Length: 387
Image 1 (cartoon, one colour):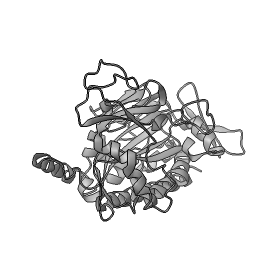
Image 2 (cartoon, rainbow, N blue to C red):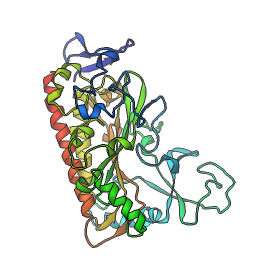
Image 3 (cartoon, rainbow, N blue to C red):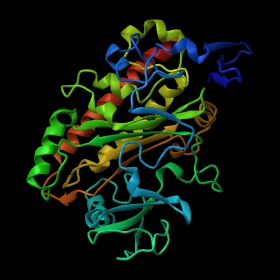
Image 4 (cartoon, helix red, strand yellow):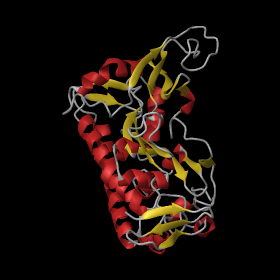
C-alpha cells in the first residue's frame, strides 16, 4: 500500500510502494477552492461552502468546527447527552414506544433473521433512567436528570462515536477522527398516531425530497478535514435541496465521501466524485467503501429486510475513520472492521409490528446499496488513474 504523509506546511505527499521517492498529491488548500464548484458539479456550487478545503461560498447549512463530532450528524442533538458516568454511553430523551422497542420488540424481530444472535445492526441498550416529575436540574446519568412529560423516557444507549476499540481496550474509541453520516430511511415520515395536520405536512415533505421516490434522504454529515484539522458539518438542509426525482442524488451522496487526489481533478467533469484537499486519498477511500462499508451494509440489509414491521423516521448512521494516518495504519493490519467503520440503524421512536416487511424501508435499502456500489465503481476508476 502507498503511504500518505501530511506535512507541516499543509501538503500531502505520497510514497510509492517500494520506493523512497515522494511527490505531492495535493497542494496548498488555496489551490483547490474550485474543487466542489463548477469543476465537479455546478448544481452544488450554489449550496456548498467556500472555505480553504471545500468549495466556493459558505451557506448556513455548512460550518467548520474544532470540536469532536456531535452525537447525531443530522438529527435532533438537543435530546441526546453524553452519560457523565460513562462516555461510552449516551442518554436519549424519547417516547415510550422507542423504549419498548429496545426492551422487547427488537429481540422479537431478530428471531425473523438468519442470525438471531447478531445485535450489531442497532445500538446496545443499557436500560432506562428513572423519570422524576419534579427534577432538580441534574446532569444525564444522575437521579435528577430531565424535566419530561409523562409520555417521555430517558434511555441509555451505546455511544456509537465512542465505541470501544478492539486494539486499545483502555480507550473509549477505536476511531481517531470519525466521519459521521446520517441518512434517513423509508418512504413515509409519519406513523398511524400522527394528527391529520402532521400527516399532511409529512406527505408534503416526503414528496418534496428524495424520500417518497427513493426511500432515503441525506440528513447530514460531519467530516474531518486533515488540512484544517477541524470538522465540516453539513446540515439536513443540504439533502433537502436534492431533486426529488433523483437528479443529482448520486453526486450529493458522493459529497459525503470526498476524496483528495489532485491528479484526477482535471478529469472531474466526467466523474461523479467530490474532491477536497482535506479529504482521504482516493485509494484509501476505495478500500473503506469496498472492503469494509459495503460488506457491513449488506449484512445489515440481509438481517433487517425480513423483519415484519413498520418503521418511520429511522436513519442509518455510517461512521468511518477520517484521519489519514490512523486509517492507513488500520487498513494495513485490520484487527477488527469496527475500528475502521460501523454501520448502524438508529431512531426507533415510530415502530410497530406488521404482517410483512416495510416496503418503504426496503426501497431505501435498495437505493442505499446502489449508491454505495456506484461510489465504489467511481473510486475504483479514479484509483486506477492515480497509480
